[in-house]
Length: 153
Image (cartoon, rainbow, N blue to C red):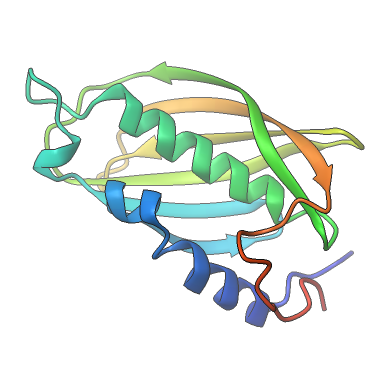
């Protein structure tokens, strides 16, 4: 069984965490492993909709991102993915605290992958759950084609 290179994980996190969309939502990738991803975001005023609760689009973005990276970590090198479908269940409203998303690769085929993610509060309350279908795209890499350590040991 392949093992994800810790140097690769560190380099990828250093690239994705400061990306504009992650900064916009104040989310951060905390852990990546083969078929798993852990993201966190502290709820801020900018996440709230007019009724004072976190907007559903924030949950959707975090679920999609955690599921994406969980699947991405299982892909061969020089292969990318992009989301083609997102299904979400909103399970509890949130006004403050930390959003913790755990992504998992459910299945990886030749052309499609399926990932899922759950968002919980720091107290462990389930807030949202969703799945993302992703299409596998050979040669579709990170923006700017950065030089990275080998993906697998």
